Image 1 (tube, rainbow, N blue to C red):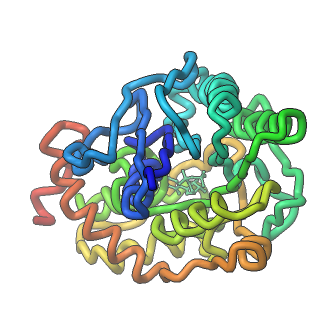
Image 2 (image 1 turned 180 degrees about the horizontal axis):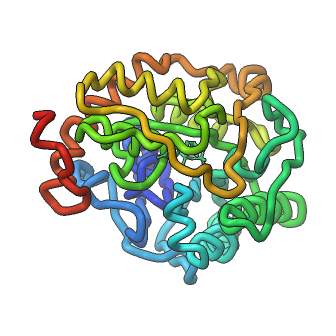
Length: 331
Ligand code: UDP
C-alpha cells in the first residue's frame, strides 16, 4: 500500500522536527515546510538523505501549494517563545491566522485531516487551576503576549468553523510547556535560558520572585499524545502536557543541581508583563479519550535535555549565537 503523506509546517522547529522523526518512523511520507525565521535546518539535516522526507522552504502565510495527495496536515509553524513573538509580532499573527486559513483551504482541497498546534496560552493568565478544556481563558488581547494568544484563539475558531461548516476533519491540541533536545539555546524560554546560563557559569535569570508555576512535558511524551490525537475521532480541543507543576524558583535550583557548575547562581530580574502566575494542564480528557499520560519524569527528561545542551551551548558560542561569558571556567 502507498505510504500516507503528511505535511508538517514548522518542520525545522523544535516540535516540528520531532514530529517529522515520529511520522517517518511510523512509515509515512513527510513533507516538512518551514520559512526558517525561527526554525533551523540543523534540526532536520539528519533527514535529508531519507527518500521519504522532502523539505519545502516556504512561508505558509502566503498561498500554499503542495503537489499530490495529502492525508494529514499538521500546522506547527509559529514563533513560540515570548521573546520570539515580541520580536516578530506581525509574523506571529499572520502565521496563526492567514497561515491557518491557507492550510485549511489546502486540507479541504486534498480532503486531508487537519491538526493544529494550539497552546495553553489560550487560557492566558488563568483564573481556573489546573486548566480544563472548557475554561475560556483570561487573555489581554493588546498585551505583549496578545499577538500569540489571539492568533492561536483565532486559529481554533477558524479550524472549528471549517469543521462545522465544511465538514473538514479537524483536531486541536492545546500544548503546555514542552522541553527537550533541539530547543534553540537562545530562544529566551526558561529552560534553554537556565541551561545555557548554568553551563556558562552565569546567573540563572529568575523573573520576579520565582513563585510563578509551570508544568513541563518532555517532548517524546508530547509527540505520543499528538500522534494519538491525530488518529482519534476527537474534534474538541485536548490538553497535552505534564501536570507535574513546579515554581520557576524551584526549577532553577533543579537545573543548578544537575549542571553542578560552581560559578552558576540565581539572579532575579523583573517579571515580564502579563506573565501567567500559574499553569498546569488538567489531562483528564487526554487520559479518557486517548489513553495517554506522560511517562517521562522531569528528572529523567532534564538529564536527557542536559546531554543536548552540553553540546549545543559550546556550538552556539562557537558560531557567535551565544556570548561566551564565563564559559572557559566551566570546561
Ligand atoms: N522565566 C524566567 N527566566 C527566564 C525566562 C523565563 O524566570 O530567563 C520565567 C517566565 O517569567 C515564566 C516562566 O519562566 O514565568 C516560563 O517562561 P517561558 O518563556 O519559558 O514560557 P511561558 O510559559 O511564559 O510561555
